[in-house]
Amino acid sequence: MKTNDDSRAEEALTDIVVELQKIADRLDELVLDAVRTAVSQGSTKRSEADKKLTKCRSQILRVIRLLNDADDDLPF
Image (cartoon, rainbow, N blue to C red; front, side, top):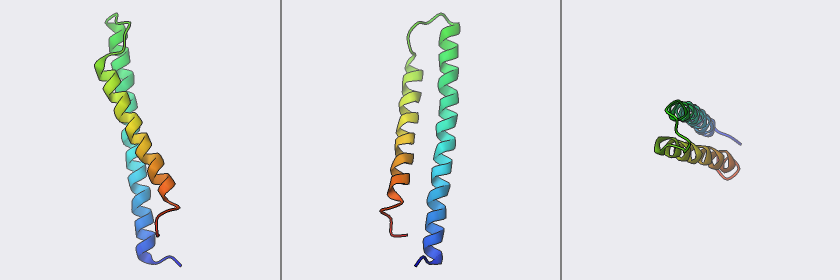
């Protein structure tokens, strides 16, 4: 049986996942901006900014997956 504390914990976890998804979306926009800038400057290779931002976004998406998978393992 779930308690109020359990419900609050679940809600907090959901809020964190939503916030992380927003951050991943913002990073995605920055990646696209970096690509557009590089292309407009005639570059044919990925910029370091693009690579770093893409890596950060990937790691955040990994955390989201871990948190979503952890739902079954958490005691609430």
